[in-house]
Each structure stands twice: as C-alpha cells, then as structure tokens.
Length: 220
Image 1 (cartoon, rainbow, N blue to C red):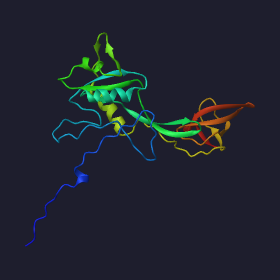
Image 2 (image 1 turned 90 degrees about the horizontal axis):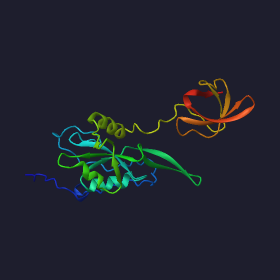
Image 3 (image 1 turned 30 degrees about the horizontal axis):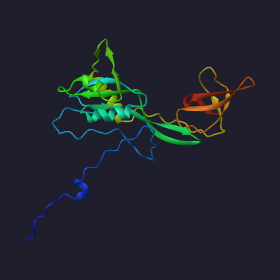
Image 4 (image 1 turned 120 degrees about the vertical axis):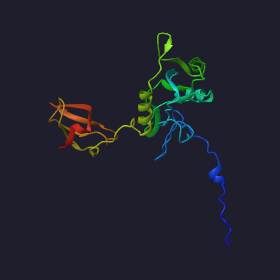
C-alpha cells in the first residue's frame, strides 16, 4: 500500500519577495522591465481592475515637486493611498554614454486613488505633494473610464516610442518622399533609434540638418 503524497510549501514558494522600485535616474539593464510597485492580487469576485487602476477607489490628479513623482508615490503608499504614475523607457545620453531610464509620462503629476474611508485632504499632507488639480476650491474627481485607459496603456506599454519601420544606417543616402522637402536627397547622420531620423539635406547648395519621420524617407 502506497503512502499518499503530501504537498508541502517550500521556502522559495512561500517567501515574500520585496518590491523593487526603479529610482528616478537608475539605469535599466538589457531586457529589464521595471515598474512602479504593483498592487497585491485580488480575489476572483473582486471588481475588475487593470494594472494600477482599482474601480473601487476615487482618483485625483496631484501636482508633485519637480522630479518628485517617485518620492511622493512612496509617501502616499505608506499613508494607505494608491498612487499611480504612468511611465515609459527613454534614452539618456551623458558623457558619450547611452543608458535607458524609466521616466514619467506626465512629469510633475501623479494620479492618486483613495477609498471611501479616506479624505482627499490627507493627500495634501504627504511630502512631495504640492496640490490637487481642482475647479475652484474643489478637487476634480477623475472619471473611471479615463483612469482605466491610462492604466491599460501603461500595462501594455502603449507609452513606449514605436520602433522605426524601415532600416537605415549611418551614411546612407535617402530621398524625402513627403512634406515640403519632397524629392531632396540627404544623408543619414546616425543610425535611427526611434521613428525620427537625423539627416543632412542638400537643399539648393546648402546643407540643412533636420529630423524626419521614417515614413517620409526611402533609400536613394
């Protein structure tokens, strides 16, 4: 007779992992996808929520100190509120080096959700919060559909810059096929890393540097 197998929780499955918050100027590693802290998992019968959006909360837009979105969010979360800061990965160039960093989509602002038991006055008492977007003296309550769209866009990386559709390389000759410079021949100044490409145009004997969308260029 065999003994029934008894499943036991192992340490690696029962441990609670700490949340990692990307600092304002911390560089991302290759393939790394860091986010602002995510809320805990909800029961199956809980109202639908998307990313950082919770339909059971009331949301406001808070103005925060310059470059203080992360700091204000941390204090608001400690106080029991639910801050939400949509973000995207951008390239930073410094001292000849390129790094990828995560930056807010709306610099200087954070969306803050509160429960029915909480007061919006308490949001203003948290460090880093300057004011709430208001109509007169009354803070504006953001509509749920708007917050749902913002959270969904952040969840599915809609704020990230799209990659170029065409492949161009530095020094390549290109022809403008749209806009007021149509037909002019130029040269790619550097390999594209977004939809905008820096080219050097030969316009009536003069050299003109300009940024052009990839859809307006083709190989010459």
